[in-house]
Length: 100
Image 1 (cartoon, helix red, strand yellow):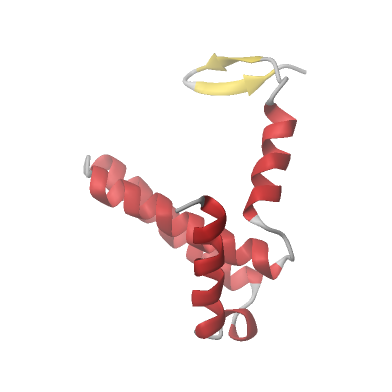
Image 2 (cartoon, rainbow, N blue to C red):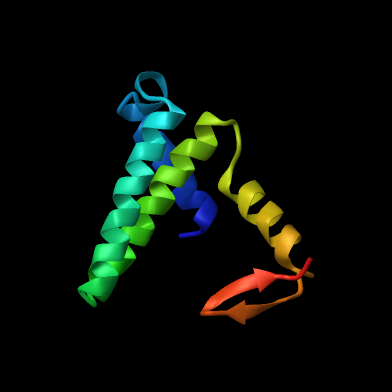
């Protein structure tokens, strides 16, 4: 399946469950933090299955947030790439720091 196909299925899943009428972006922020906590836990437990699941869960929540904000994942991902594609920087203490 393509990312676009999965995005449509995730949105349909959310619609079928009333997510877009019964929730709001701040509620989804809370869910995203919960999923991030699961990702961190999976990392420290060295569980590749749980790590992949947590990343996927975060992508689902981000799909819902984007939909609630009238955006789609491709647009968001493309915009982020266009901002970083020519960026210069270096790794400092294990973290990429952009120049300027």
